[in-house]
Image 1: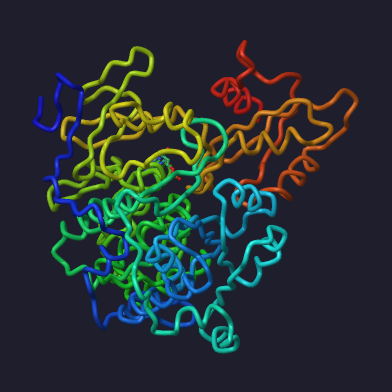
Image 2: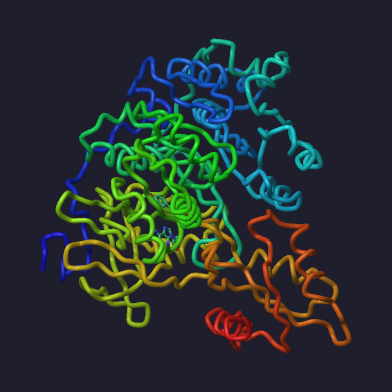
Length: 540
Ligand code: 4UW
């Protein structure tokens, strides 16, 4: 066996050398990032307005923000909701909150009123940042709201607004609170392997490990200087993948992040050409759209691009081949991570001689893995499939106020059950082959079937319901509902879809409905998910 796998223990080790992580127990994410000071370069640029924030400005805005929040009565341990779309101010708000020792909880700004209400109650939010269009949805909650303007023009217009005051004061906290690496920094939401979505508690240690093991490590593997890298941020910063890179990690490298507020393939191409973007992290539907768009035109071949990395959902060989043929000068890799592992997992690793596009890559430094047969519990050697278990410094502390879910996800030895079926090849590259857990991945976004079932079951004419993901060429998977109507009900497919759409964020909408007489359930009443998915797929 190779030296990165121990047949005695069944443990896989990273093929990369181990890295030193800061061992000072009193270290927080912002101090860690700011310890790598970068002067001069632009940290963040708004792709549509060209407005930018330099590194020195970013540092000053973050400190000023922390001071202002403190003056408003926010203190260490308070939870602050970020209900904002991608913006150059996203990291200013996020890092400002963390600098104060408070906790951020990001949420999709398109979430519905009831989703926002649930979220606020679940993690006991004290204050929310949002954009003007979303204020109405937050008002019923009664918590204080700070509006984040969309661009500098608005900012000048509302120059007496609290946001302007918050970021432009050149203030700093008189004394910083004592923040420990073990303290909570962020609460993200994920359904994990089963049930409704839950708060994933990430500590400063988790975030610092992510910056070191994922972002800084990857940059160190390449010859080009990371402060010359220009990243295009299309992926949402409220999701762990975008958050880790754009709002936190890249700022420790001195890279420039070009922020696109909304995905539009023509704007993407324009931005890559205009800002000479070198790195473009994507999810599968964006890769498909990019390939299609480039194939159909004889225009740009995006010469500045060095690397495109893709993840968050399965990617077909056909799409990879199409992309690699269209832009052969670009280094293409896949990556894998989870909210529960602070985005740390695997990253593709190509060399001049060896290019592997279909693998999700090599295990990140300092991380360990097991591949476990879920029937027998035995650990599987290279070449054999099983559930991926992960262990290491980036694994979450647990689910918020949910010991039961935590215990069934992280075992006593610290292994996180990912719910993904994988295998290692003989060179240590990982492949993902199936998913055991309930989540649906729509365009890389998580959807918990249980959340949608909960909504459906409140409908007065629905007797029983189950939701499952069905393969879809454009989006990867779409949520489909299996519904048992009340006897005599003539409720239509559309009425059900509209009913759900009113109550959930747009990406969670039910895309198809199939009526049935009964839902496959176990003797204990649990929905038999595999069977449900099979039934649905065969009926569509
Ligand atoms: N192929 C197939 C993949 C893949 C995948 C994830 O919403 P979450 O909790 O988190 C994410 C994080 C994605 C990510 C983080 C860091 C990174 O470098 C990277 O590289 C491109 C991607 O999506 O969902 C986690 C679940 O999403 C699935 C898998 O089921 C996982 O448990 N997933 N990446 N490359 N499936």
